Length: 490
Ligand code: ADP
Ligand code: GLC
Image (cartoon, protein in one colour):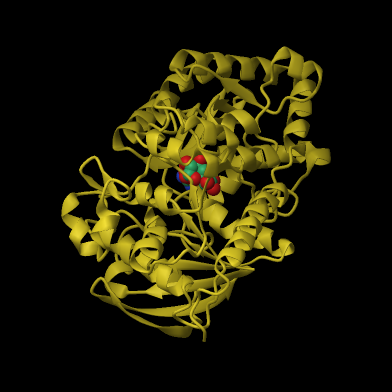
């Protein structure tokens, strides 16, 4: 079975967050299930730089006023299709924002074109790509099923995965007429959303199956608290909504073979982590104060609760611990963290920025990794942390609540705990969790037990990939019965 995954970022080509990790890892995990995935990505500058040897697959004209060249390349076990339209994708800044941190003003066009091209490729317009199932991710590719259904009257099966409902791709009604979709697609039944155009809403309505990245988040988004205004729409898709927890690429994130940390180790050689701890402290310019080394490795946003970190840092310092932060995001949060580091020069250090290498070093050497998210569809950082024996300290929400077993007395005495959770997600309970972690750290033997337990937790893709495979297979079988051959013949 051939799956076309259409996605706006994929590791190792281009990454702003967990979406790229998932898009890069799932195809490899599906292969043992007899599923071959091709991944279509926009031809951003860094993507073209990573793939100097691409072969042309074909050309697509008439894409809302743009023409594309589709190229293909293989990398790290991925079959990559690159949609090259230089005027839309090769520009300064990131995939979604410019160098000054503002959304590219034509994002609606960039991703409508990407989705329209994806739909045409999925339908077999370029014979070199044959597709049985389409997999789209988040608002950037949510128009694919809309084009398939309304512009091409196709019933090719589509799975739409919601990685984060907070990002919905909502645009002004002025763009509606420029999407080259029939009026029926623009009404309340599909794209219309509070008077504007909602890309994600269209995708949720037009896909055969909607998945999200943990069972808990699948439940949470049906409620007004975490439905972000789309809970009503999601309620109508309840029967087609599935939660499948993300996995991690256990080759890339493996403390026993990771080339980045100072020393490699596994659950039987935990003392070797000391060298990595020293390397983290030295990288951040901190002396060793002997207490627990906390860390945060995250987008610095409200979602991630990063605004609560400076307050928690006071508690960490009061308890004799230290804190390193690697992240970037809201300017006010960045300032508050810099200020905190300035107040505690020997205890707190902050790296404003994004660094894949530093991410590996931090999880290999810190004692606690904090993720005080206010909502979290799945979260990958806590999974990486556990695999590296860094104990997660998280807000109890979404994927965080189901991937971590809180170190309460009962869980500790039964030796099943893997981290610390707090609730409500507010500064006072965050501080309380910091105190619990510091207390637990004082009993070094119990702490090592916690580390070993966390390292044992299995979040490889195996189980989740088989859940995706089952969904794909069921959809494919149903579609084949209903429409024996809809695709173009080549
Ligand atoms: P989200 O996608 O919401 O940001 P996830 O936990 O799913 O959250 O994924 C975040 C990914 O981004 C992880 O791979 C994490 O290691 C990485 N990451 C986040 N912040 C940074 C940073 N400052 N430097 C390097 N990697 C980061
Ligand atoms: C989103 C979510 C995060 C999830 C990631 C990958 O960015 O915020 O929780 O792990 O997507 O699915």
